[in-house]
Length: 243
Image (cartoon, rainbow, N blue to C red; front, side, top):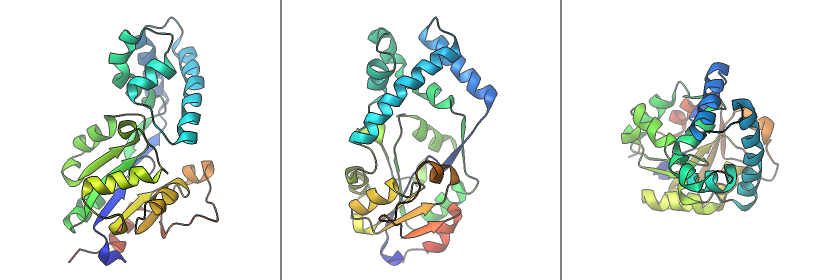
């Protein structure tokens, strides 16, 4: 099957990058979030309020498999009691700060080597990610010198639909110009990432074992990936150079 693969799509959160808790960094992000909005609440109180509103938004997103844009997220769901004309232009910055409240996002040590080598071996590479941000992932790829190796980036915040909706996988295959049955998806969620890829008719689904993900969303017996790997670099053992 590997010989027929033309495109490999990758998840980002907990697959290409992980979150490292850094209390000073997280506290600074909460402070900047409060300052940017001009709230009279303390940074911690403000963050707690946003957490409650965010839970409602995430519940909607997961149930309906849709994603709000950054502007909609902040003007309608997170800060509906603030002036729209003030919050809308800040939505991108607010999203980045909100994400930073969770910790620092850093790439796995083997990401650069794996991405560059798979590209050299002749595979088209793409990103399919559920994310609330519209700029963070492209900016990271640019900063780490990976943009030239990634043929397309499909983000739920940009297309409005989320994994495991097969449509986001089909959209990615269409953009990269490869039939779904010649595509592979690599993620960390043993249910969502597998269900979506299989529903779209992808040739393979590969799960990178990530303990934090497995705690939150354990595997289901009726949904099984084609392969499970412990490290990203194992992809180089699975996908040889294309003829």
